[in-house]
Each structure stands twice: as structure tokens, then as C-alpha cells.
Image 1 (tube, rainbow, N blue to C red):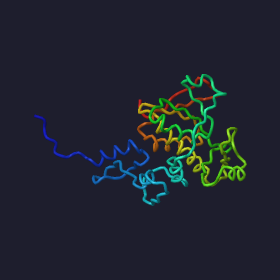
Image 2: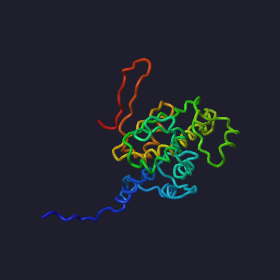
Image 3: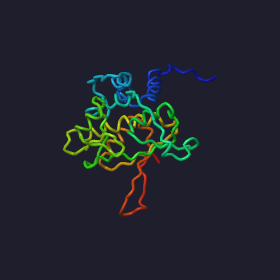
Length: 245
């Protein structure tokens, strides 16, 4: 006869594991009663996920934080009243093709794809701004209408999307980039299948911040490898830095 277990299941850690599947960004670290580190819920962050207003939380915790992070989470969760318009005159085999090409603000596109492609995408590849100080990033400010914004900033891309220069003299140089990336990665995670994968092209300027950001959104156990390559000096020089062999 099997020996009886002398302790009951740890329902708290089981519940935390279930929440981690839905909201990996709400998982932090704490010390248990035995003095050993264990996973815990960041309740302020969880409240933010379930709120349409900014939730304040001064409690100390292990996390990646920056000015504007809560606004970025609100941006990711905020609904939009937009739709995709078919361009038959610019399409090939519109009624039978299995391909879809979308022109427009990538944040809007990611939100519009949520219902149809939720949990269905096998692979995502993105090549975001590297934040070198010379490139542009998307500005997600929904507090003013687009005409007022364009008059103020005088910046937009070829598709009419709103862009702003992110110079190193900006006091929120890294924060603005993180706030731009956060909602897009969060929405991208929703689209991936359980066995899906995302590839992100980046350079050394924001690689460390991007890794921390992805650990929070996708869960640090989901990281597979960093693929490093030399573009000019040796085109065949490719190797991986993996967390495990």
C-alpha cells in the first residue's frame, strides 16, 4: 500500500501557478515562512490588469519598473473602436488567399487581431526601433485627437502613423521606449499558441531591458536563446547564448 502523504497540497502555490499562466507579469518574488524564496502575486499589478484606471502601489517588490509603465498597461488593455477596411483593388486573389497584409498603426492592428487570431499564431517576428537616439518610436497618446497631435509634433510615417523622435537628451529615453514596447508585446503574447515562438531583432542599446521586459510578459521560463550575429566582418559568425544546454 502506498504511504499516505503527511501534508496537504499547497493550494496557494497552485493558485499562483494558475494566475501565472494568465498574467505572468503579475508574478514576483518573496520569502516564505521558511526563509526560502518563492513566487508570489503582485496584487497591485493584478489590480491594474483588472482596472481601467491607474492603480497606485508603493509596495516594494522585485520587478522591472519605469515612469509610465501603468499607462502602458492601460494602453494595452484599452479597447478601440476601429475596423479593418479591405483593399480589393490592391489585393491578389482576395477571396481565396490565405495571406493577410495590414497597413496601419501596429498597436491598432494587434488589437483588431485579438478576437480572430487569439492563441492561434505559430510565429511572430518583429524588428522594433533599436532606440539608438536617432530613430523614431510610436507615441501612444490617446488623450488628444490626431490632428492636434500632428500639428504639435509634425511627425508621422508613410502610413500616417504618429511618430516622435526619442533623443538621448530626453529624460525618459529608456522609459518611453519601454512604454512603446510593453503594450505591443503584451498583445503579441495573446496571439501566440501555447507552442508559439516570437523572435525580436534588437541591438545592445536596449537588449538588457528587452530581455527583462519579455521575462515579465512571457515568463522567464519561456526564454530559449539569444542569437548573436556579425553583419559585416563575418557573415557566417552565428552562435547562441542559451539558458540551458
